[in-house]
Image 1 (cartoon, rainbow, N blue to C red):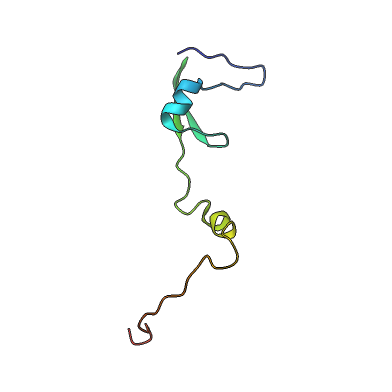
Image 2: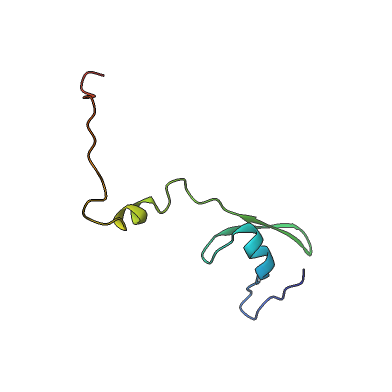
Length: 76
């Protein structure tokens, strides 16, 4: 696939690649120079809990969490 470097030094990944690999805006990549004219692009994995706080804050305030009866963990 062919792409072009912009005047700002940006490279656009073709939509076909982004869709196939689930690449979304804001995701980070490492760029490695293999040799002159050859580069490697590697997607950085987000931390395991990234987005959890935002997800929890987005939960409805009332009646979302339901208390369940359980044995006490004090004796463990």
